[in-house]
Length: 154
Length: 154
Image 1 (cartoon, rainbow over the protein chains, first blue to last red):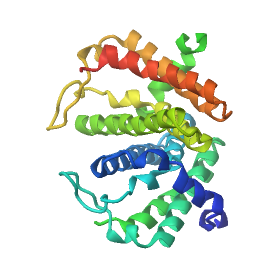
Image 2: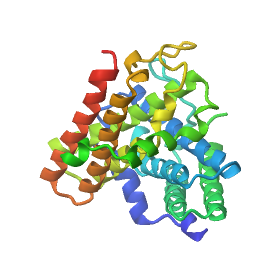
Image 3: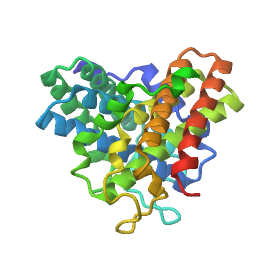
Image 4: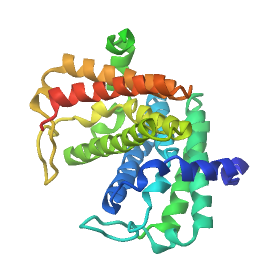
């Protein structure tokens, strides 16, 4: 699991860069709605993987769901937490905690762990080993939870 | 462009399979919200690619945005057009036209073209050739528009 907890300079750089080009042009409420869309779509795909691990295992479904999650995870969602997105704005609610905007070091760590876990899941899913996939899925779920516990209101 | 208009049996199969495992468990309104989340997140990434093609070109941003779009495109969104999702339900609106649920042949074609264009875009983006990327991006945009024109209300 070492590779999941090691946050490299490259990862940090890509977290900040990958979405940076457009965030300044988006209204705060649009940033909130867009990040929520990303989480919602990832959640659907997490559900598909879970259903496959608990029932009939279809490698293609799992592989494609994992690729969708990894694609979203790597797309620079950090850029969607711009100024003014720390609380409800123009009727758009958010569950983000204020700490996300002040504890950059910890945010970088949980975000980096999440991206690493998503990439690992996508890679493992291509092999078709259900037990290994289950382990990678568990690690990915933990990386989601680590952020929710610290930076999302109940 | 031949590869964009040729819909293979494999593509059709994966369109129907990749999301099928979980759709039956989702309420119609949740299916609508989830497909809208996918489109919204793809739209953000399309915007990033457009901004890069029109301004300073950052290959990493474009490559990751294209990978996110391809990941979502391949995730079996067809499963999110289940029974009862053809019109507003429990306060959740949709712009889908009735034709999407009756003209399966044409839906299969536009969906297959879209997936092929998204995969082509993701592959081309890794090469870093701005002109080639611009062409692939144009083709991807056209494949989005082809569906909107036929199956989305204004």
